[in-house]
Image 1 (cartoon, rainbow, N blue to C red):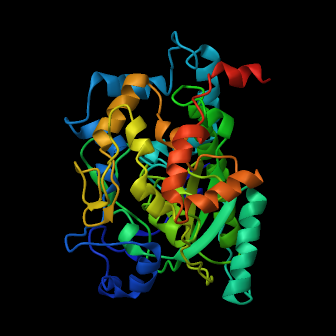
Image 2: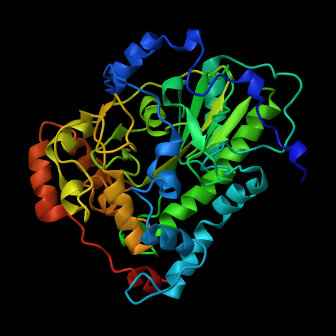
Length: 413
């Protein structure tokens, strides 16, 4: 399909990447929701450039580049099976197949330097309706949008207000793979962010770290590419603007927390009551009038303040053991936000040595349980109560599940 068939935002309608317009610089309007979400900012807050995340730094920053990085990215295309359970040809074949849809989306704009879902929002083929549909109340409209999102396959859906603080100032240039940056082209006028959660396969997660386990992540990236694109197309069919997003355009986690889908944990993940940390997230930016959800507290932050299980289990010791702090050990952490921040350089270096992603911190998390079981739902409530210290002790003594041998997944067939 020709390039002109894509629906791209016009640069003239956007705001400069490093400076929002004056009417967007007053962030005091978020004070109440920030407080509900537990967000704390310092005076040196700066919006983040995706150009500085660890995956993009790997292409231009000498502090990150290495032969292992090159081998890691090559392994995503032509993996080399090796000895060790979970790294066979069967395992690598599954992980590559699980990523195939997400990679197809990412590659369809490659000649334009566009990498959908990773550096650029998903482009739509269906023409936007010329007239806007009559809408019921924002509450009823939000309920319908959530129903449609779940119809397309989302497991969780929440809606929050658009907050430009989390929009990337720039994205990396996929065409040059150099230190060059390009402006983030999200246009003005967005009012809401629809956030969707996609539950990961627990049996596969239990075998991290392995190539087999990485299939659990790849499948959700592929699923969300289709779900997000479908939901964006639905909204545009009603005459409103919609920009589907995965890792691109803006930081996802703050929107997830504000949409009431979970709390941020020490392991750098949003922990939900439905899946624990075992969930991926995507989002759709829109100007459709929608009612917004509120953050919810489950006592997860207080539990993580006492528990260091993920940090203890991290092989490269990339996770912090102390309380949340502003900033981080290198430029891959956003400035001026008080939170738990990983040492992304240590984490990514470990990934590249294994040639696949690592999610040991997800696997060992006390909240990684099967919440279709009533007794695990009871444990979830107790962990967020004043009994949290007792629950941490009990989790380490009795409730911790050892890594499952990857071949167990194949044998279960």
